[in-house]
Amino acid sequence: MNAEYWLDTATEKIRFRPDRKAVRRELQDHLEDRMEAGKAKGLSPYEAEEAATAAMGDPVALAEELARVHSPWWGRLWRLSQWALAIAVLVTVSSAVPRLREYLQYEMYDPPFPFSVEEGSYTREFYTGYAKEITVPEAWDIGGSVDLGHYRFTVSGAWVEEWTVSGEDPYPVRQLVITLRASTWRFWEPLNGSQFMILDHMPSDSGGNTYGYDVDTAPGEDEPLSLFCETFQRGATTWLRVELNQTRDMDSWSVPDWVDIPVGCGGDILRVDLSKGVIS
Amino acid sequence: MAQRHRRRFLRNLFLVLIFSLILWYAEGCPLPTQEMELHRWERQRLAPESTVVWSYQGRQGNDRDMLVGVSPDYVHAYAENYRLTLWPRSGDTATLVVLPDRTRYQDKASSYLDPALVAVDPPPQAESARLFLDFSLRYAGTTEEADPAALTRVPAPTYTLEGDRQEGAFFFQLQRQYRHLGGENPTEEEQLLTGREDDIMAFLELEEPRWLSFSYVLTFYDSDGDLLETVTSP
Amino acid sequence: MARGDRSALPGGTAMLVLALLQEREMYGYEIIEELEKRSDQVFQMKEGTLYPVLHSLEKEKLVTARDQEAPSGRKRRYYRVTAAGLQALEAKKEEWQVYARAVTAILTNA
Image (cartoon, rainbow over all chains, first blue to last red; front, side):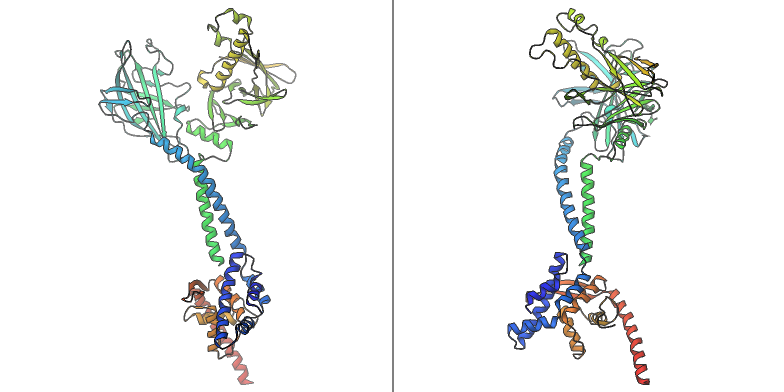
């Protein structure tokens, strides 16, 4: 029998192609060894081939046996998983790479406001290129933390800022700045700072003042003082900068002992005590 | 041989899992249901978890799916991946909220996108509802045109909407009254009307609840047509 | 231990193969040669039938295989017995010896 024919017949029932090829190669190996032995004994190539295939036995019966041992299922599963992996990689790369680039671009930017500042003075630079000279007469180190939801709130910095509004009629401004930091282990759910303080509750302080968003620059006696919020998010952490009382009337306002900042809408209040730490 | 295939299969499976996680994270960690997304937004706002009472399926792609939920003190309105707005909930009467995104509706042959409102907590026997919106106050005292008398010649910016009872809440679709007015050369009055309507639509669509105030009268009727409840704007 | 019996464990060819591999790792052709040599030509099986046995043993993790290139350029698949394989071999050897003793007992007393 022709060696190739013998090999093909013996392996044709093995369904998974790579397995079939591997087994065929092994059998071919054996056949060739046998044929070489035959030639060494003086047989012609043709006779050696005949003897070798005869010695190997009935290929049809063998095919059944081999097929039974080499079930195609694991091989097919593997093949399937290769395709699945290729698709997964392709889809992920095509979607993740542009996002990664976007993300890196954002990460390249410095935060728009400082998280904490020391007493003295510094220059704050804005994206537009505008720079402001700011004096910091007083700064506090606030410790402690408050857990709300699955966020942990700490105070990154608290200080007083003074600067002069330039223009035709320059006037001095003094305000209290508190930077809050909210972090979570659930990196897919950082705090949404942009909607942070809303609805009915307004910050207040130990001096009896309240603060609100839409106020005049020179409010009257019992009206709320100005409030401004800015947020910055990076990864699982959100920073909130709270500016209290950016007003021209410096004499009637002094730095309070504590400030109550309402958060979310559940009525939780963060009390930043400038003499000690953060409470709820 | 089978062992090798099995090993590689398992390894590939593991890698597919890893890549899927990366993909999921890159896509902003989407959650399987709308409701779970809503609750995530609520957590990120430190808002209480709401119970969903009304939903909307976005149709042709550019209108978003929306959900309206209630919690003891608030009504939550959510537009998928876009915006969550919270409204104070009145305990004893119905509460009207403006949806955070526009909805699509058919008018004759075409479909349009316009803001819409939903009233939750209607009286239990209410079968129908009507909403009367009046934006005149918004334009009172504004000199819009060189000719203030034009304001009197032109209809007041009001809308009367019929409510559609859906899932225990009432849905009100706002429809523009002055679309493509005047064609190529609109008159001053026509310009005024369309300009004002553009402004109203933008106002409703984009403003935050705290600044979204307008006059309205909301009425509910039972199956006989008798008046059940009236809610007016504060 | 019947002649047609080539499922992984019980006696027959499998047991013999495991016994051979105990000494060193071998490839298919080598195994055939050794079987013939040591049995003084008594065991002359059809050579192809060795392979379902070898592959079964591999599947049952009684042997492991690795490919190695011989200096002649031919790729050879070497089989080596595992610890589990040795255990199975011992069990089978015992079974075989029990069987052989029983047969001898009957024959000598006949």
